[in-house]
Structure formats: structure tokens, C-alpha cells
Image (cartoon, rainbow, N blue to C red; front, side, top):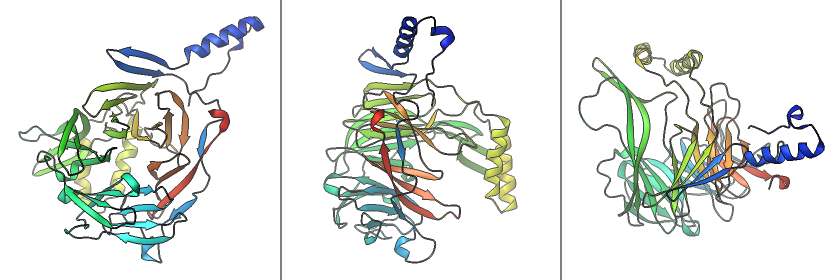
Length: 410
């Protein structure tokens, strides 16, 4: 986080001059609001929180769910989402067993909903959990493109299939819950046809709005998608996300959604009809991808492969791969319960802890909040951050941290 410091040699001729110089510099560091054809552009150069003040997470989680051995209700595997309900209960999407698990505010197990299967309230592949009205929750079954609705007590209420998704591969549909019972669905299309050749492909993402019955209600726009690398080597064709490549990030808020790829430090806010309303920006210097970064990445990937034939193939893939020259500006976006935009800075190799830059509901940069290593954030409330943490043994935990706000930072 950058911070302003006085330069006494430049501004120290007199008390009056010091005051004038300081005021002028502080004005220059304020966010710049511009309007371009009805689009609000917010340019940020410096955080509003004073140095040493701001928000932070508690040192230890207030709730920790997850064990290596013991009661299976606390053994988590492939957690794909978690929510805190209004009464403090926690809902966890445990895709390893294709069920929703409910825990009380202290983390004690209460009940489960759903199971593996194809019937009502069952899942072939539980991949997403979202909040709905009255503490009901939505769960997405990706093989069947089906949304299941569970009431506040965890009982299956109804389900519906998302229609008009024939162009999208089932595994590349990304739901997000909106107000008024609507869903924002991001669908990816990787290729436009023709034979695949070795190279980098930029896919396209279509953001679509569906109603509570799974019927397409509006088109929210077509946007640049993620970068993928295709290796067509002999009879083998391998598809993987491009290392250090751009990816897509969406966060619903009010009657629209934030969207960005990290290609630059800009997060755009769109209406549900696809109109660009605001652009939130921050001064950013792109990080160069160095040979050391590439070596570190490749070595980490190869460490996970025991089969020698597969290892040689992956090595040949990396040998053909054109790595990007720079890293993305960020790697995730979320909106908290108060409408603040959280942007996770792209985590450079060797970075100790993830950091999030927080912007208020007007797009003004407040400051930076750090989260624990190996912690994936799912939900940010007024006074908590909820997510999945993986320990050194790869044991999954769902943890809730208190979000402590320094009064002097407001």
C-alpha cells in the first residue's frame, strides 16, 4: 500500500508554505472523478485510511470447522462455497459428498441437505452456493445445469433447469445471485470452430440474466474472457489456463455487477442490460514475468506429477508455451454487505499473504486488508470474513474471522 510522506526539503521554507504545499499535494492524491458519456470514472492514486490504521482480520478464526479424523460431519472435501445466514448459522457446500451442511454459530453440526444423485434436491456435481431471500440458499448442480432452492431450515423447496445455455459447456457456467430472485450466469465459449493448433486462446464470456424459473430474462453483455493455452502435440491435445494469464471476475451489487479480467487495474460496473456505468481504477505498475517466476511455476506443477510419461508430456507443453510478459493486476473481486468493493491483488510468487484493496461504494480507495495464506474468501459481512482454509496437510477448513474496523479510519 502506498503512503504519502512529507518532503521537508521541498515544502519546508516556512510554516505557511509547508501548509500550502501539503494541502495541494493532498488534493492531488484524492480520487479523481470524471464523466465520459455518462460513465463515471474513478481514478485512485492513494488510500484514504491513514498509515497504520484501517481494517484487519482477527489473529485467529472465531469459528473453525474441519478435522482430519473424527466425526465425518466435520470432515470436509472439495468445499465450493460457504454462507453465513442472518441468525449466524453457517451453510457449507461440500461437493465431495454433494451435500449442504448446516452448522450453528459456534460451528457445531446441525443437519445436512442434498446428496449424490439425479433426483429433486440431489446433485451430480455441487459447484456453487448462493444466498437468496429469507435465509434460503441456492445450489448449482453443474452436470444438469440445475439450480436447487433450499429453505431457511435446509429443506428442499424446488428446483429449475437453466435454459438457453446450449452454447455453453456444462462445466463452464458461473452463477451469481442477484436481488429480486434473479441470477447472473456467466458462460464461457472457448473456441469459434476449426482445428485446434498450439497457441494462446482468448475465450469470450456471456453474462446472462435468468429469472427464478430458469428462463432467460436479459442479456448483460459479451466480454473478454480468460486466457487459455492449447498444446496440440501429436495425438495429444491439452488445454490449460495460461500461467500468469488473465481470467474473469464477477461480483453482483445492487441492480448490476462488477466485472474485470485483471488486464489492467480497472473494475467495470455494468447494469443488468449490459450498460457500462462506472469504472473503478487504481494507479498500478505491472509486474514483469521473469525467468525465475517461470521456473518456479513449472517446478511446482511438475512436483505434483508422479507418472513419468505424463511428466515428460507436461514438460513439452511448457517448452512450447509463450508466457505473458506481465502478471495480471488482480485475481478476484467481491462486494461486502455494505457495498464496498474488495479487489484481491494478484499474488506474486513468494508473496506471504494475500492482500485485498478495498474501495467504498463510490469507488474511492480506502486501503488494504490482508487475509491468511491458503484462505479462499467466500463472503464478507459487516464484521466478518468467511472462507475456506487449507492446512499444510491439505485438510480443508471453513473458517470465520472477525473483521475489525479501526474507528479512526472512517
